[in-house]
Length: 339
Image (tube, rainbow, N blue to C red; front, side, top):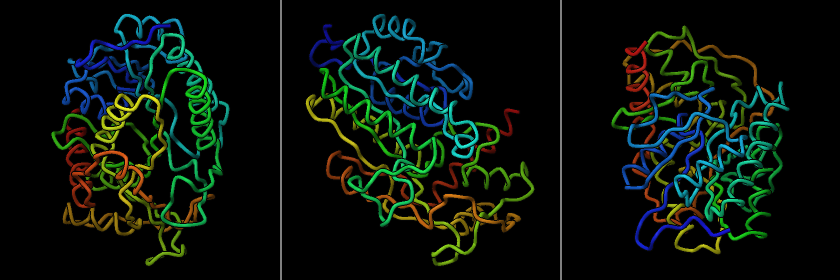
């Protein structure tokens, strides 16, 4: 089928799945700010209609509905897909694996099928550092073994495999961006992490800081780290969104090349360091409750980001823990005012 490319010099429409969610809504903002036409498909199970700007077209629906997705691609002459829709809670994936293999794998297979059928040439996928499992070395490089230890990580890795195989068989290329710990909110206050009951540490900590939780649990204090708590690579969501737009430009410029790249800063902070940063931001102390380790949590998980920096002109603007916390806190206060 003829590919959905627009005239030379114009930007093709980008279909953003899950564009009403946390990371997807920031990608929509980044695309719109850079002048890309955007259409969003989201079933609003975890997303929010108000998170999609008026400048983007919005379609309420499920990515597993091939007929709907096909109509949207054709109607908007979609030339690229950014795929964020899916389930993301690791413990839930252990308790309900079939939900994750449905939402993250089977429905993505349907989405990729629609892309192939309609001739969409570029696909950017929201992958995860969970594809590595518990790595033997830190920082983690893309060429290290992918041995995920939970259904969430496996469901995402399966999508990477599908994209690799489809890129080999069809006229399309892809970029899978493996996220580390995404945090923060749009610096202009247009979007942020809004999901009730979220499990991300910085989100939980700023909720506690404004009185919406009475404590923060610290799971494990005997890790092989400087202070005994787990170390993670926290990346600002707006820097992550910028990486997606740059990846899209790379795919268009080099249509025969595909990429798998880590998205992180290459440095880590412990749980206690994060809580200290929230305390600094509010000039108060969060109640910390020490609890047992959670199964499968590695001592540290930090990205080697040399590949993305060598491949894309990506220059993070918010690579600072206090900045990430400040933006998350400002968004949490704004959310509290909405309710």
